[in-house]
Length: 484
Length: 119
Image (cartoon, rainbow over all chains, first blue to last red; front, side, top):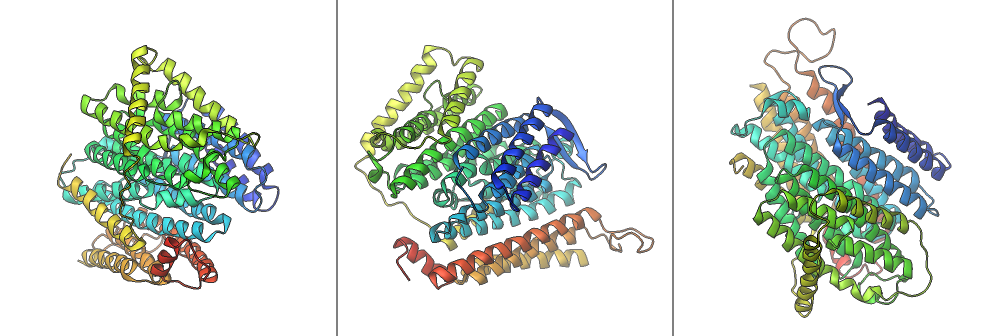
């Protein structure tokens, strides 16, 4: 416990020190400190109350913390290699942001999670806007306002739950076996879920996410999709542990999976396209949580952090080098390392063996009932179909910068190989054949859909707020009416 | 009864705040609406800590039962966060005002659709 806390403190403290001078050195020191602390506290530690009884903040080194720490440290190392030239406050802010995420993965206290989610939003806004482009500032401002609306709802839910049950520690709540037939408690739980869903970027509740992720500078997009979204997923995992809300999470997962996919299919801006896929991939994680497949969801969180990081790194590099954002105008313009990085990432997200996406999807599908498996396959097919758009980009030019791409590509391959060997039932021809068949079917779907150009509704800022509030009331209503 | 009135007031504040956040076109008005809604959440927590006839949860304020101290401690943090949010958001409103000469959300959205022409 002491080791984990000093790791977090090292990140926060060294990040702040970096604002004074030598930002990259302090960031590197934080990475070293974090790695040493991680090595000391793995494979985990039991729950402790920091600050003493009875109101201390509950922390535990559970599998979620281990997974998120590993992911965050790999992403941080990649950024340090890749963003060597970044000046201003980039390194200090990313260091503090990563420290926040590390703390969030350890936390098992609902209010503590609120503070960390809020802090991560504030830091994310500063990072999104750090390029001083009007587009990015506007996307970032909407991001902040919408997440704050969500977190205000979260605070209301927190009050209701505390008033009814008298505790905010996840384990203590789970121990009481809360009965959601009490409408006040159910409304509280619904508001907590809705607030966290907004912060996480669940479809309809989090329409801000693709623009904010797409408009942010390259390395910032990597962090946003890689770990900032994941604190929300951890919070949802904690909520599903404390309260019986599996069905609602499953429903949210299906909506966000297919909703995000629908928009991704026809999005033309490369980075916004990847942002919509972050939304769609959340569907896998939420459905995993809803089905009670915690380990599968966790493996998906880590795998997604790695391959989406790789995709955003490659895409950002391409967009910044070429100066255009539309997928069609980037064809044949990518350098070899960038094209390879994008290719590996796309294969991983489509679930091709033996990459990380394959192992994660395999583990998720294992315990799932037949209908859920069918949904996973459909989602995989859609993902392959929408990523088929990128095929013209894989005719690379000579030369170009390598940066942090190999680190993430190696991590995606390593996690994939490890997962394929360790998860039972993935080392046979049938599983591999299925994966290739889904991707082939996805490509076929792409060929069929290529001629269709529907106009999907785009919502302005006010409507985003309205839809968010309506969605939140809907989620709270679902829990209250006992559709569990 | 005072507790219940405070809860009702908290919910009314949140409604008023969200209403302003939705219907106003000016960004500063919107941010103030958000802040009022957040104050509603803060008042809500304080109101739920209320016990009939209780004194404030401060050591040395005399005998008798005190209100639940935990929500008060939470609220302190929440107030700081709300302040930070508002301050930071206003910084970016200033940035937008300098670069686009407007705080009108509808104009910003129109500009966004047109690819941000020179103002």
